[in-house]
Image 1 (cartoon, one colour):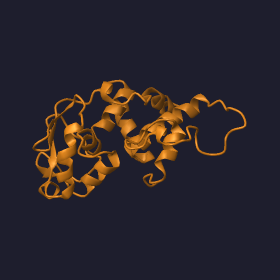
Image 2 (cartoon, rainbow, N blue to C red; image 1 turned 120 degrees about the horizontal axis):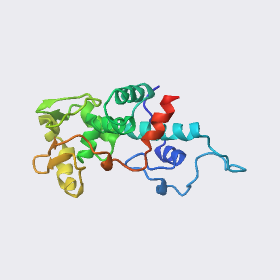
Image 3 (tube, rainbow, N blue to C red; image 1 turned 180 degrees about the vertical axis):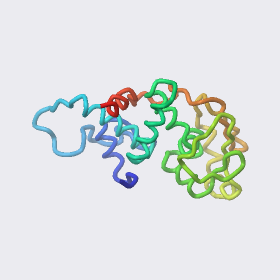
Image 4 (tube, rainbow, N blue to C red; image 1 turned 30 degrees about the vertical axis):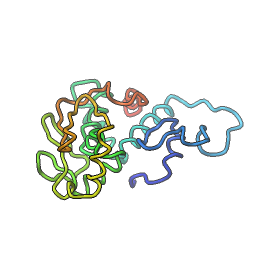
Length: 202
C-alpha cells in the first residue's frame, strides 16, 4: 500500500478528528462522515472503534500498515505500557521530531525536508524519516538547507511556535536538542492508544 495522498479534509471527517496538522474538521461545512447521509444511525462495533483509532494514528503519522505494525511490535517488546510506548516510538521518529521542533508545519513537510537532505543529526545529514532520535541528539539544518529560501522564511515565523517539553530549540541557530524521551502528556488527546493495543491483540 502506498502512502495516502488523497483528500485530507475528507479523511479527517471520516475519523471525526483533526489528524492532519493543517486540516481541521471545522474547516469543512460538512461535519458528518463523507458519503450519503444514513437513513438511520448505525452502531459501530467495538472492533470498528478500535480500527478507527488505529487508522487515526496511522494516517496522522504518515505510516503504511506494515510500518505501523512494526512499530507496534517494537512497543510490545518495551518495558512500559504498550499503548504509551507505541505513541512515544512514533514521536521519536526523525520526521516527527522535525515537525515538533517547528521546522515544518506538517509531518509530510517534515518528511520532505528529511528526504531532500535538508536535515542533519549531530551535524551529519540524515535523510531517513523513520530514523529514531535519541536523548542528546542535536537536530539542525544541513548547509544546503540553511542556504535555502525556506529557512529564511522559517526564521521569521518559528518565533511564534512552541515545542514539547522533551525538546529544546535555539531559534537563532535553528538547532534543536532532544533532552528527554517524549512525554505522553505532550501527545494530542484525540488518540486512544489502548484501543490500538486491543485491536492488534485479537
